[in-house]
Image (cartoon, rainbow, N blue to C red; front, side):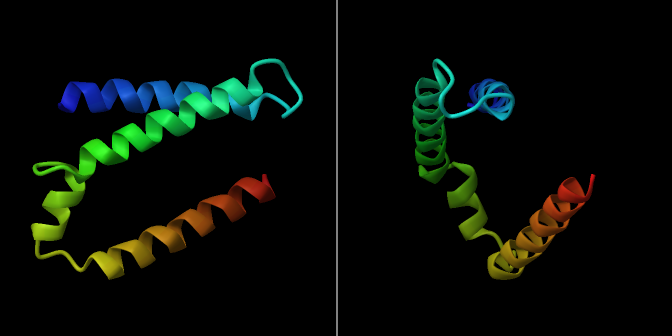
Length: 85
């Protein structure tokens, strides 16, 4: 399962990089968006299963709300740094 997740992440990163260099009117843009969406939906479904990352996180003692807030703040920080560059 771990190896499958690695391959899925690599595939998603590749598609995101391709999309980043495209415009919505470019050939295959819509196809890439559709494939990326399907890949992500499949990946999330796998992670929600018993033994998946989401299921394990729910069983942990982590404060998931706090973790989510930290991740959101970090995302905003990264995005603002990216826009400033």
